[in-house]
Amino acid sequence: MLNRSPRNLPVRVVTFIAVAMLVLMPSTAGAQLGPVDLGAADSFAVLAGQGVTNTVTPTLVTGDLGTHPNPAVTNFPPGTVNGAIHQADAAALQAKNALIAAYNDAASRTPATTIATELGGQNLTPGIYNSLSGTFEIVAGGTLTLDASGDPDGVFIFQMATTLVTFDSSAVSLIGSASPCNVWWQVGSSATIGTNSDFSGNILALTSIQVQNNAVVEGRALARNASVTLDDATIDGSACITAAPSPSASPGPSGGPSPSGPGTPTAQVPSVPSGGPQTGGRPTGGAQIGGLLALGGALLAAAAATFAIRRRAARHE
Image (cartoon, rainbow, N blue to C red; front, side, top):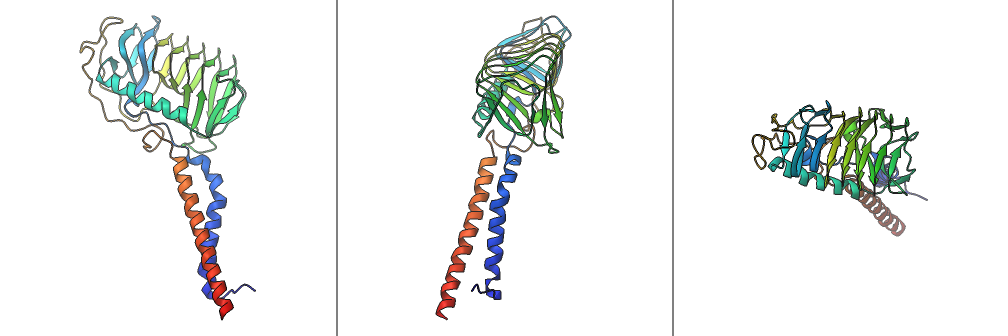
């Protein structure tokens, strides 16, 4: 018969705590997905490797605009940048290196849930998603709904081996306190945001990004290796830029360097990772959950050992 004397109370308390930790851990795993750290690229709404082109339209960019190593920035004006323009300077190089790290971070996150290529009509909660086809799209007029279920820090990561395409008049709708700053699109080749699309999130493309006529991106358009092309588009990074945009730098002639010239950095305000606390560019959830599981297991093992010792001592008595 189990001895229920006061001597066994600590054992029962430790056992209860350990079991509770192990049982409740799965329900908290989703909340542990950390944001992607943009580091020095935080203040940039548009960043490219081979130039940024506006198609002679009143495109509006809120946040810094940069390109490295190709300094070409074309048709600003008539495009407007509410921030600084960095053309192959030190700030653009730092941002480019930070983008590479962020891209690799987003691409390496696990575990991912595999879903349909067509995102239109889906309602998703925070998590990591990929598709069997290696591409994602939103059909013309379709809407992808991202529901953070009341958690403003809920993170969504979409991983693509190849392309992201949103067709005309499609949308990404955020509900339940979801933030565009915590939506990440890791694109293995190129992204195309279609005419009249209403898009949310940070596009991290390996190759190029094209934002078509009258499309709105609430977030960022960041292309590692090729160009960013904007056609009467709006790129609004204001909600996500945690570092103040760099002091405004007026561009020179269309497609040419700024008056300061390539290689002359514009003063930067130190950046803070968007979407939450700094994580060093790596996911924090796995380490936190693993540590708590180890603690719960250790407590349970200690309780079991103590109980066994006391049972043996009781029998000798």
